Image (cartoon, rainbow, N blue to C red; front, side, top):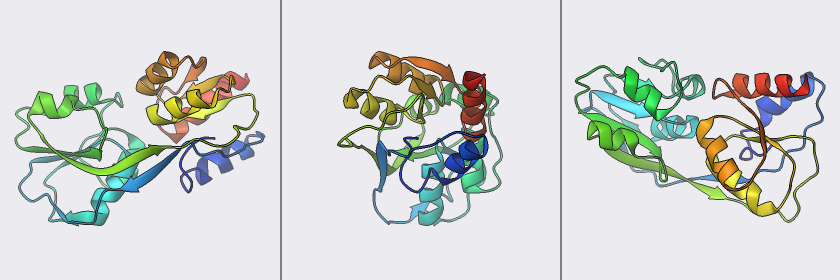
Length: 204
């Protein structure tokens, strides 16, 4: 398990309930980028592309969003009730299902987030947090590594470990394979349930 410290608890619990022995070795950490209020009153849509972004915007929120789109179920749950969760949990999937004209749009996300939605919708962008890639002194042995972000994939590659991995989604898979990591499974839904299902498939 490579998720940031404090964000692994539920997945570890569920994996252990399935009979797996789980070691947590965080490969990323989340660093908020300030405390200034983020005013959303003038936006027709606020778009959230991660659970971390949802929590950070909630913490710094000023005003009430007219409508909120979340890239996936876990992101929506981190925020609360949302107006749109696309069938495909990617920026492309969200873009395809966002009603047009979208009006004025705010993308609230990680500093390094892809800008597909910004470019396609002429949206405003507010960076809420930074993902730090960590370098553990020794990566633990195991049969499978779970990678829940492209940042974790890059950090894992730098450890030099050769354990195959299961990825949370296509962007993470691409980053992992580019870095030379063997991907043996990918979550069909890009959330905790998807990772659990991918582990079950791999375990047979």
